[in-house]
Image (cartoon, rainbow, N blue to C red; front, side):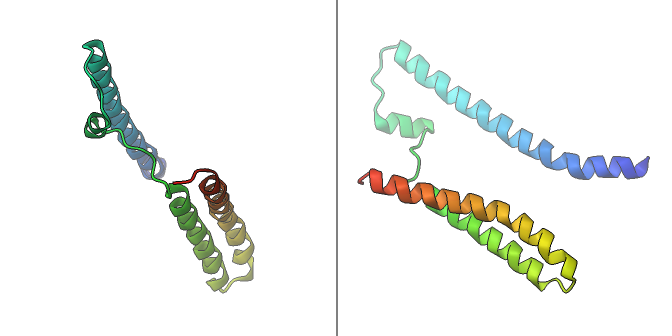
Amino acid sequence: MEGIIGIIAVFGTIPLVVFIILYFRNKARSKNVELVKAMLDKDKEITPAVIKAVGFSAKRSHSDLRTGMILVAIGIATLLLGGMIPEDEAQGPMAGLAMFPLLIGVAYLGFWCIISRKDPE
């Protein structure tokens, strides 16, 4: 019984923390949306400075590049970790595990490459 509680505590903590973070982030964003709606109802002019002050920000131009590079680095690090383990049976599963962030990172880099050529800045 104690083992089950320990497993639930360990693996249940991560989703709980993610839920709490996302809940409060969504709550803050909904308050900002309500503020903008109230300003629109009062016929006040909404400038880009007001939008920025409220907390809405534009997407960074290189966010796909950054995310892609981080994921590719995580994939390569996992692949190298699998190669460092002396047992022959560990290299295959670690290489398979490394492919997930590696290929997602390559997809992000592809998106960045395609979109950066379309949007002149």
